[in-house]
Image (tube, rainbow, N blue to C red; front, side, top):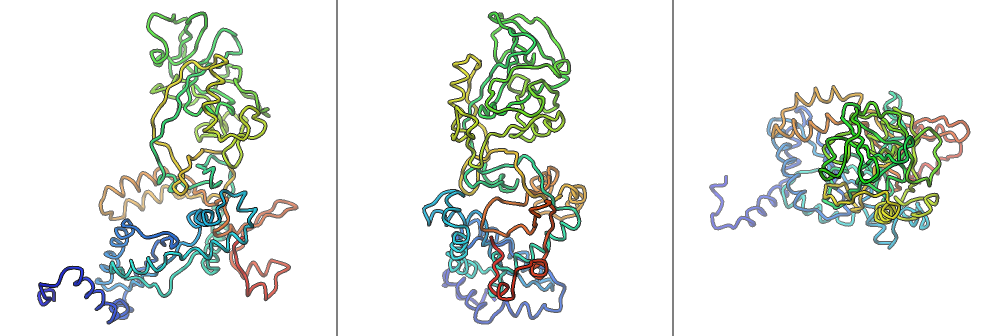
Length: 496
């Protein structure tokens, strides 16, 4: 066929001729008619967000999708290729916030959640025409006439049906865990979202002393890159099998890992008085350096933890169970208190009187200055490392103990890994590397978001007894509700 085409036609004009031919002769529809009796190959496009402009990365991804669908069509499969639009979530909310010149959840609630959601609904198809033109221009065959749209009740109800199935099987639960949390958007993020927002940043690296409760002249040397979490310190951790020393230096005694002496002390300026394993330090007590918050459990003693290393720091890790997964797990093991004097905006609460209202990371320098004045700070450096940021608003994330809803994906971890080995990946390294490693590190999926414009979680809690139950459909909702009418159903909007 291509041999018969005029060689003088420029490439763009040739592309237009092909696209016009496909459109005028409804080639996509004819391909469906020709294969309608063939085996189904189901393709629902992972939906783009129509309130943002398409980019070159969308062309690349859609090219791969189109190649697979065309190949399946050529092998006789019936491939309907259903389009979709992702009309929910933070991208939409942030754009509406900008339009309204407001910022954050407090101002959204002042404006009115219902009115805000109406603005979100009206904004979601801002660039739909651009998307349609791109879809046609790159020759991407897709059923744009019957798309699924995530804000429509039918779609929301389908999500409710799935969540109800998970609820009935005991796979949907509410838990209090460490989550990556965006303080500006005031919502937790999934691990997939976190992976999209890493940036190289400079953070303080400080060494501080914590006085032994057994000897006023002996101090534990502790290292941290998050000075603000020292406010919430409740324990110290050492590795049970690492060698630790007590050394004398300028009239004071310090305890740290033997392998880390050279990072803090020059040869000839100290004398080692004793050497012992970390296991011998377990249970030893020390005095906290900040006492803003009262604790309701036993605290301020040394624990043993396998995650402690001597690759950096002092071999002694400060523990704040509210702000770190390792810390949280250790806190559960030793039944430590969870001290979390930080609000939803990532700012210190009123009880932290010296830093109340300050964003925790901005409080670092003031905290360091205070430690220096109190002669608790031994050394300060700066480290450059990769740190996660919100992929939507670019705010630095906090690892934060919060209540959230989870799906027990970890229950199926072994089955997922086994099935992944059966997939014919191109290139093979993706299945073994990025995706395979993601499966190996699978944790329960944090499903819920503390926002407004999205599918509401279909779990109701009794105000009297706390009993919870999930509703799986609009029919079930109307059967169980006591004050809804047929008229309510006609104007039903399942959003908040």
